[in-house]
Each structure stands twice: as C-alpha cells, then as structure tokens.
Length: 150
Image 1 (cartoon, rainbow, N blue to C red):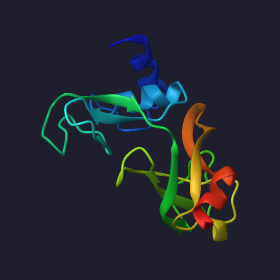
Image 2 (image 1 turned 90 degrees about the vertical axis):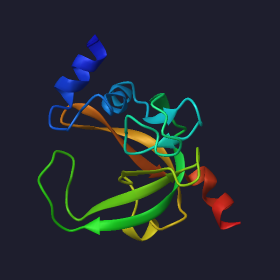
Image 3 (image 1 turned 135 degrees about the vertical axis):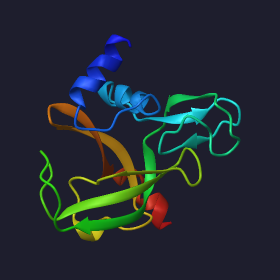
Image 4 (image 1 turned 180 degrees about the horizontal axis):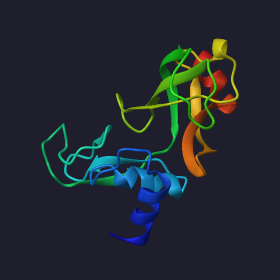
C-alpha cells in the first residue's frame, strides 16, 4: 500500500473501500473524478469492478473523466442518515457524463434551486468538504445552458 492509498483509507474510513474502488478515493484526494476504465475496449464503468462489464477484460484501472455532463435523473431526499454537509431535503442526481454514452455517476447538485435540477440540465464537477475530506459535487454549468436549450 502506498501513502496515497493509506491516506484515502484514513480520510474515507466511513466508506466501503476495496481494491477495486480505492482509485476513486485517491482521485477525490487530488480533486479528480477517476472511474475505472478498461485498457482493452476503452470503456469506463461505474461502480468500480475488477472486470470490465463490456469485454470481460481484467485490464482496468482508474482514469480521470472530464467532469462535464447532464442531469439524467434527480430525486429529492426528505430524510436520511445524518452526515456532515447534508441537510434535508437533499437533492440526489444521477449525472450522465459526456465522456461516454450511458456513463452515469451519482452525486448532488449544489447551489441550485430544486426546480432547476431537471433532466438535461448541463452540469460540471466541483468539490466540497465533507468529514474534512474532498467530496465530488456538481454545479449547473451556466456556460452551457444555452447549448442545451438550442
């Protein structure tokens, strides 16, 4: 285990970290969203797995994604477990990343009214702190709003 992996295990001790997804959390520490990508077929997949679900290759490793995408689905949680930085009601969004059709990542959209978090809304990756560690969130990408409406 290297120093970055040890830090990820320590700072995200409340998460279920294993050898398949530790690269995701190492990326979080570097403010980079890294999803597992197959070196043989070139497809990303989420959640992290040791085997590519597209071609069954075991040649997968974490790779950074652009962090740009659109809201695919959004729900408003009205209750849940207490966590630093989470107040209810709390928007949860499934973001379809532009890097690959069908590649989706679940997070939240911050600094937006609930009415503005709807399917097709362009978003971009941003970061916040939760439990004294970086956590990926999304913001509405105002620079691309007109692209989507056109």
